[in-house]
Image (tube, rainbow over all chains, first blue to last red):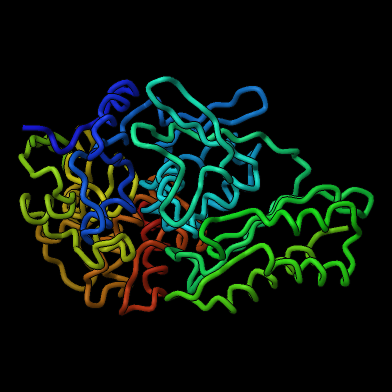
Length: 280
Length: 170
């Protein structure tokens, strides 16, 4: 009889086991086990990668930090180089789930799960992170923005897996901002969230990156807002103009947690809050 | 399938179906019913246990995933400690309580008691790493545990008191 659960000990074994179209990767289980119990997912074979050491490392190399897909949120938050070099990531992940969820849930799982509300995606989008996709022929890197396609959908094809995330270390002068709106602080699926990295120079917006979650089929960058702010002085008029562009960048829907109208308003307000708090 | 792990300091070998949750393995197969099932989806923390020193929701872990790991449940926590006399009633050996359990009893942080094992395990995981936490750190460590009776103030007091007890200040 075929095994239903396989503890994966090597990348080679994982690639080989993924040839079976009925195989599903299991890691922290914080999303998967719930889906299995609700009957939303049935797997012929579960490939457990939670003890696969090759995917559990955080490495720094030439201007980048590489985080293995099976690294837990707690590991990332506690890792000194993350706090020093990419504080926005630790800042965002502290708002994810609860202590228990962060101790099990993994960065790769959060991205592959591809929720429009995925908390880890906001800081990673701001950081221009790339995902590393492995298949039997080798590895390729793709911008996270191009990896996420829709609710629960990514570009991953059968036989491939997400092996890690590559984060370019940002300029230490970037100011981080992350705000998540929900019914409570812990264990909340964001109603809407907004994050930013920005740098002012001589009173002018030198560079800004803005990303939002739960307001479109995927977490996304607000490129049009970024473009209109760069090189400008932050005046009350400019902030109002930037807010007016927000609806062109997002496409929220009404669901159990909030209405689309509320989400338009919240993102617009969070953008104003962000820009009003920037020290000149 | 066969699963071998350390449960409360004792190495055990059990046979379980591959999709069994750790929570069910503990309660149904091993009769460790101190760990409770609340929501079954990681929201309430009633099923919190420690795997290799970290608090996790046992409802979100599949039993085979704990193979080779070290598990601590509320039953093990009681066994870790010396018998104590409670201020209210001295019940000798029957009252083998960990200082955290003692603190929850003495500070009235228990009402219906269903969430209590989970809160105590989360508290233990916190105090293992941080023997002198601030209120903010306590609340952050307990954010994955829900209590519908106490309003949390008594629980916060109990954790502060437990930290003092464990540091030997009282």
